[in-house]
Image (cartoon, rainbow, N blue to C red; front, side, top):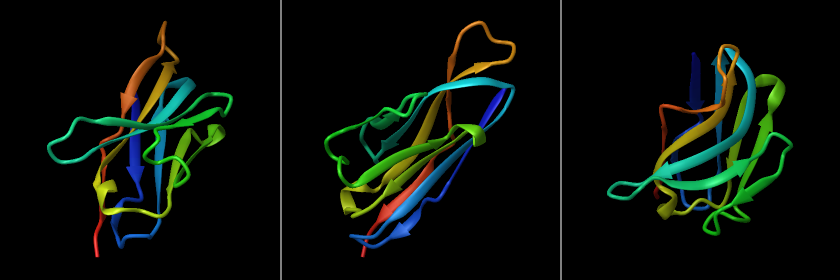
Length: 121
């Protein structure tokens, strides 16, 4: 089994910054893509950014230039640095990791529990 624990959410004023973390633990053999999603009230969950096992990143246009994704593979951790936050960034943020477990035959998706980010003055 694999467990993901997210942290770093909270209340921030417009223009402020937050850094989200997602730490994976359990029977991990290898982690492939690591990604962050968000879901605002009444909206579908959307993909924000992905980082591959070799560190290649991609971002959705709405966060490009403001959010930075990074990973510490040795610590099974992915980070999302969020700068210049806007009220429309308010949402629950989720990490998703593609993990091959020690007993698995193929990688599977694992999700974090979500962390609330609220951008408001």
